[in-house]
Image 1 (cartoon, rainbow, N blue to C red):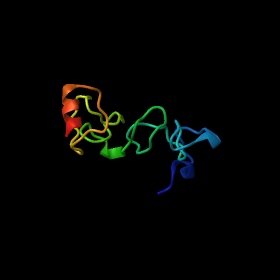
Image 2 (spheres, rainbow, N blue to C red; image 1 turned 120 degrees about the vertical axis):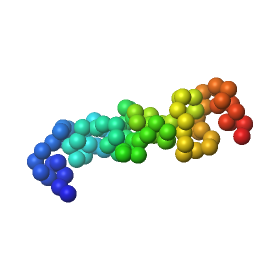
Image 3 (tube, rainbow, N blue to C red; image 1 turned 60 degrees about the vertical axis):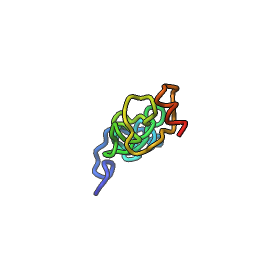
Image 4 (tube, rainbow, N blue to C red; image 1 turned 90 degrees about the vertical axis):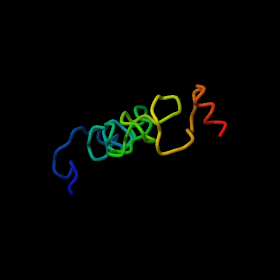
Length: 93
């Protein structure tokens, strides 16, 4: 499939500053949560269509963490904990 730039249409174009971790991707798409590319300084993660509030990367492109109020079904033990009693129980396991 032809890219936007090959078809002559662009959503943005920062010239040599286009990058897949910037506000305008190398394919001249505006960066957004859910595009599968991590927008540096704006997103923790981006798993594209696999973003979900019960996975490692939420629908808001924020990495799941213990204490965020969402069950993380993909892991038994959270990697980051903010001190709640439920977090402390996880960390003792």
